[in-house]
Length: 133
Image (tube, rainbow, N blue to C red; front, side):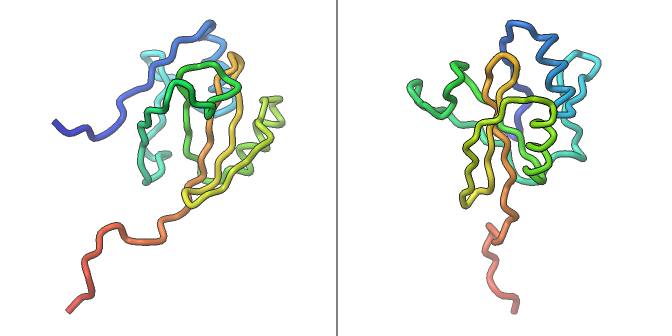
């Protein structure tokens, strides 16, 4: 059996309706007819979806006490953060940049930490096919 994508992410919430409204307003996500968010294929970036298991004592999600964290890819981090700040969203003051790209963190109304990732453009071909003859 081979897995070829993430089919969904399911998160418990104290007030699901309030979170749906917040994610619609601040992240531009739209609900489908079943009530969940779907990111249209045309908005997906061509990189990948990472599933990562971290130790239970990780501080990476701090100060959130949630057992999981959403990570959303964005094309350009600066305008996303500007919009969220204008909407009064709590933004962590630490930003990060690494070989993978730029990262920033915000918090939804229930205190869940959300990571935004602006990936670096691919600068290499992961498949080395050699020089043409």
